[in-house]
Length: 313
Ligand SMILES: [Zn+2]
Image (cartoon, rainbow, N blue to C red):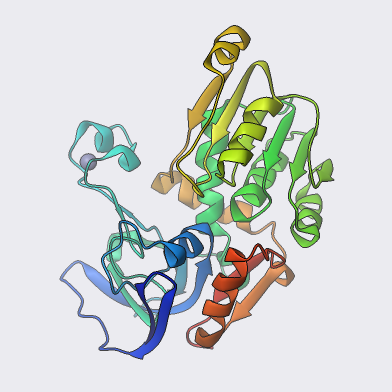
C-alpha cells in the first residue's frame, strides 16, 4: 500500500510499504480522510517525540471491514490508573496517539483497535468528518473554560481548533464570539459558524480567551485579552514558551488553564459539531500534495481552511 513516511526534519517520502499486520484487538480500515493540522506541520519541521519513520495522521476517518463509515478515536491509555478511571485518559502516564507514537492515517490502510472506532452518521460527508478530531479538542477546551451562553468569548486562531470553539459557542447559544486570524478564508468560515466578530487582531478584554495558535506571542496576546478575573485557555502547541508578568497575573486574578486532547465522550460530541461545517472549506490532497502544503505552512501560508489527505481517492 501507499504511505507517506516522515523520515526526518522536513523529509517526507511517498513509499510502497507492507499492509500493516493487525493484532487480535485491531481491525484494518481503508482510510478515506486524514486531517492535516498543526501537529503534522510541527512534526514535519521537528519530529520530536515520534519514532521514525512515522506514518503521521491522527485525525482519521474511513471504512471498516464491515463497510461501516467510522472515525478513529486516536487516544490510547492504560485504562487502569487513577487518571484513566476518572475519565481523564490524556493525563495517563501511558498516553499515546495513533498517528503520533504509532503509525496513523497518511496511508491507504491503517490498523487500529476495534474499540477506537466511532460510527459516523450517513449524512456526514468525509470532508466534514475531517473536523471531528480537531473539534474534539475544542470540546474539551470549551468545557474546561466554564464558558456559557452569556460569556464574552475571544478565540485566537481560526484553524480546526478555533473553528471548533466557534461551533461549541454557537451550540451553547453564546452570541459574543470574537475570532482573530490572519487568513481571510478562515475568518469567513468562523463567521459562517456563528462568530459575531472576525478580525486580524483583537482589542479589548473578554471573559474567556482561547489560544489555539501556541506561539509565545499568541499566548501573550491571549493573556492580555483576558479580563481581570477572567480565564485564558491554552491549547495551541506551536512553541513551548509563555512569558507572563506574574505580578500582573496575581493582581488581576486571571486563571490560565491548559487543555489537551479529549475523552471518547467529547470525541463523539464533536461529530455533531462537525456537521455544522461546509465541505467546501476542505482542500482534498493527494499524497504528493502534502509536502508542498506543509512547507507552505512553515512559510506562513495558512490560506486553506482545512487540508486533508485522501489516500484512496
Ligand atoms: Zn492510565
